[in-house]
Image (tube, rainbow, N blue to C red):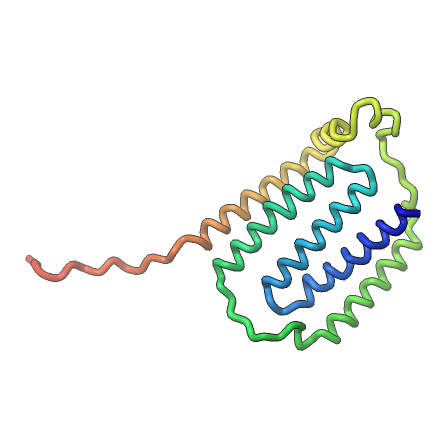
Length: 178
């Protein structure tokens, strides 16, 4: 019974935090909502007995990615008016409800419900969940893992380019001319 209560809490707060992340006008408030979303998704991973994914969620996403996001916010120094929600909030709400309805239709009509993975519970218990994730990630999903690495490299290069201060033309020294 407690598992259902915790799942309901984590799922509800995750959905609300996701909505606030895109609906709030102030970028810092959006960042705090994103932090709340990432922490509650990590709580869902704990409920699934996926401690490795919980640790990755906290360290990588709630730590590194959110710090990068806040760094970009400080770098851009956005000046916003004091308005909590976008002016087009009703349009976004309608679009969100329509997309949610479409996703629910897809979920209930999918032929892939209940698809099982290749690792049986006995193998996971024998080798450990972290080892099973590592073997799967570096064998079946190696190309996707490398593509994510290239994306992160692009993000680092973009942050360096944004952080560089533009230099104007060098003025000629006045005084002695020949």
